[in-house]
Length: 311
Image (cartoon, rainbow, N blue to C red; front, side):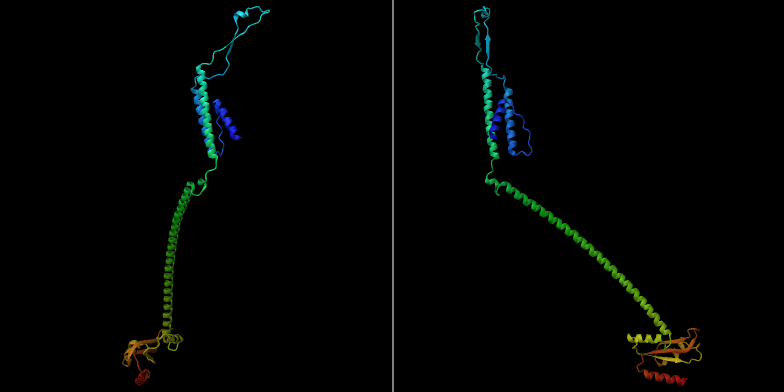
């Protein structure tokens, strides 16, 4: 029903020689665009045909009524007025040619409209199965495009992974270097602290040993010093000490005098003379340490007998 109405409307408009422009509708399909294009071609063709025509035909019955001048002056009474009707001549050849051209233009317009309707039905009809199956060109192109897009995404992901791995590796190397530097600084710091503690310990030990040496034979400092040396292995020595006392003139006795007196008994390792801590004078006693003594008892007996005899 709509197709017949459109065909009648197209025929009427084509016969008049003009066609108004249809307002564009939003969302028009490809078939609507093709229809508007063909109608525009028809309109341009008719306008060209109408502009090329020299005259416009008018289908009017040309009749000319002429009154006979002689009969007009006849008497009015009892007479009848005779009208002479005379037809005009047939249309000329120019009018016939114009009508023929217009008819030819109408026939061509009708053919164009018929061909356009056939094309419109072709576009509006359902596509064949070859265009809807997966083996169509569109499906193949789409698969290729999707494959390229997937390959591009994969390539970008690999680049991002390499970049992230490089950044992570660089960060780990930096952290390892910082940890190594911190450990090295900590080792140096601990070594310095340990060295200072060792120096402090040695200083305190030397101070205690000096105090013990300055003390008397029976003093607790000296006894503790001997015990520590014996525990560490320093007490097991091949040496012997002889305590000498009772000097009459303590001021005239020194280490050289004692060394000359007791040189004959063996090698003297050390001679220590005791002084008064308050006054600083010699007490008149001393300690002579011999080294390399094999028989301690025999050595002591020999020294004591000779000293008593000399005394």
